[in-house]
Image 1 (cartoon, one colour):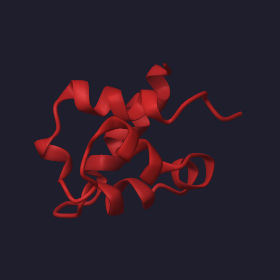
Image 2 (tube, one colour; image 1 turned 180 degrees about the horizontal axis):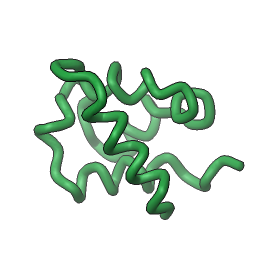
Image 3 (tube, rainbow, N blue to C red; image 1 turned 90 degrees about the vertical axis):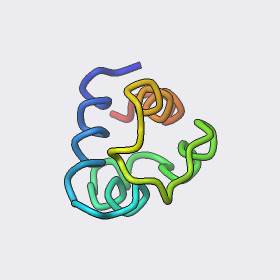
Length: 72
């Protein structure tokens, strides 16, 4: 839906080494405050206990789409 948000999501996923996807993404306050990240992971069918390096580009895109409309 939004390329800038996609980039931010991927960057947050890889920002903290050896952390699960849930922990690394929620460490980005702007994403955590604006969106339901746990709900997006469930909607995308992705286990939040996985690490970012195990996800494909398509899986990151599915998470980004599951976040819904871009928050203002």
